[in-house]
Image (cartoon, rainbow, N blue to C red; front, side, top):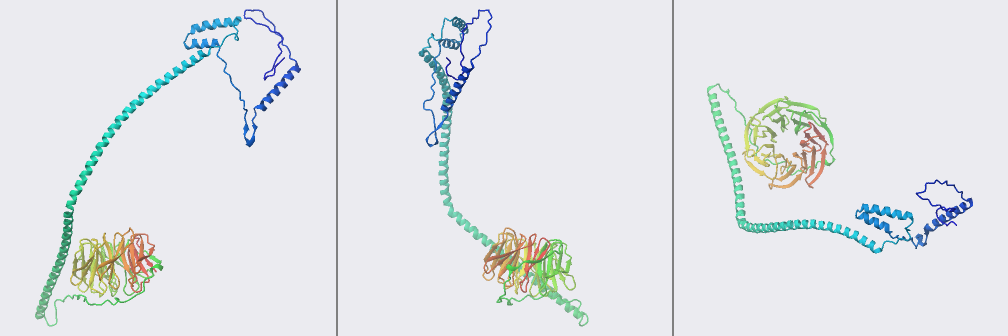
Length: 583
């Protein structure tokens, strides 16, 4: 009867033994299987497969977890047969010929039926254990050898690291010893230096006192030299006047009555010192710079516009430029009225005479020219300076003109005789700007030696020097009352000094660009600064605050000026060859 299983079962009809020695041929016939039996076997096999699949599928348990079979299949190891044991033994010890003889004899006995597998005893467990233990001992010996080599390498590394550690420890101890020695030496030197500290302080104090005395002596020397030169000039002038008078007397005696061979040169008198300032107690409305905007810009020069000046009576401005010319313009139309050409180099300054009939200009060609506006021509040329002239200014009475130069001097010219009446010496670098104190005979100069100085026009002596700037001073100006000075330097710093107490009372920082010029409004409470960053910066001096930045130029602003009668508008001159009108 067939048994149930996964493979098909067949009915054995006859058993025939085949021998390799038989040479007879036998014809095998195919025996058909019974169809009913095949169907039954197929159904049983299908049922067995379905049952097996159903049992092996996971059934869901409580909580959604799958329930696995609690009786897993057990694998039982079959003991090694005796022939395999001998084969493995012979292969292990490389006994090939013995292995061949054993296999031949073993297969012959097995084919003859003398040996049955069921009758052969299994290999004893002790042999298997010994064999396994031999293999384990072999593997352990290999691991021991590897561990010995690793231990030897580790020992060598440890010896190397220990030597390096000892070396670094010794080096560290030596460094610590040297450090302690240096600390002791520093302490000893510090104590030794402290002994000299009082002596150094005393020597420093003596040095400062000596430098102050040296500076005072230098100032005294300059003052005496200026006084000596003034006395010498006065003596020479007196001698020339006396000689001229003698000549005139002789000519009167020799010639006909009433006829003079030579005329006398008239000298303007020095301005008096007791003139009051008519605006000393006046109060004017401050300029509303916060509301100002650029209403017009005029490009009338081929080079940078360096200076700007207002006409004292009519709405006209004059501009000086690097294109060797100066021009007069109507405000606010900006129409050209007059152009002056004659300088051989850049024109650095321009100013109107108090009566408005004359214009004075200065240039890099070392000349100062006086122009007649009505006749539209140069009236006089003053060539007393030896280097470039930076600025010029008229006295409020119109009798004197002052000019400052790169030759470190400032000169005062008599407008009647057109001669140099006074030379102010004392600055040790270029004098960049000069102006008069309103309604006074004092002259104010700004120099590249970082100082601002006041001079007496009559005596030619320095009255006061203001210190505090850390770089070259570009410009200095008085307010209308004459009691405040605003000076600006190349660091962008603007300082305000009180003339009455000779001290600084305010400092304004306009930024990293140079401050080229400054201007007070009519009230003296608003200050405009021409900056190198192409803007005009305005400040309220009463509240000490920044008001507005007037922007519109494309390059550095060189000069700025308020309209002198009402301060209702501002004019600025720039390096971009334009001057702008702000209202």
